[in-house]
Image (cartoon, rainbow, N blue to C red; front, side, top):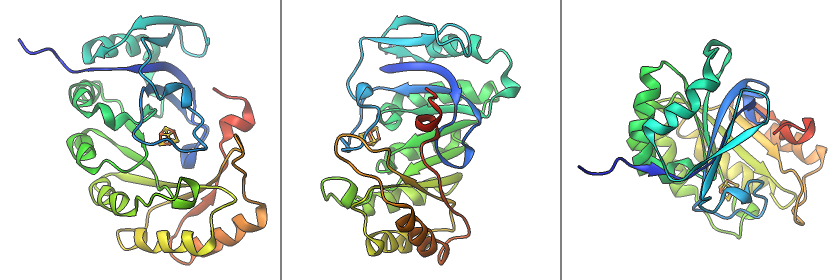
Length: 251
Ligand code: SF4
């Protein structure tokens, strides 16, 4: 019999959503290992390699963890998260995060089918450049929270074509688009990207000032106000929301 697909998972825990328009909601986070990008401002570098074990919170909100061996199959993962979801009505969703969860789409198909049977909403947090992989799981996802990577925040690489293909698939679901803003981002760079996105739809836009680290600097307030103004000329909702988990000391 063929082996069921397995994934490397870094950690599983209950927490408060720290980013985007659902900030403060109670979520069950599943953080997958590995990523196909290496952003200079990445704050989950620890999860970019395949960890030999996955840390699982013993009980919701205790921050006591036990370890299980990687890789993990769908049945095992359902068994690991079920005790944390005893009171499932107080959860906003199960958040697939990373790293880049879509690297594990073959694993996600059977896993997300199981979540659907359990009637749990699913949020996918993604870098938004794997449209084919998204197509394999889009039927099982409720919210797609995608990054739009501006070249000046990376090494100059332009992923706009991939982002737009990705959005064409994602728009079948609720979509939130997050732009991480560093001090290097220019007004015209942001405006051009927003104009491309607007051709596909009027999505909620989040401008997230980068949490400074490793020499990457945040924009000032006046720059953010101007960027919001630019965005509001095109989109109904453009909010500036920093990483609240960093400010609040949340996990
Ligand atoms: S896409 Fe996300 S997880 Fe991957 S390197 Fe960039 S910030 Fe980190």
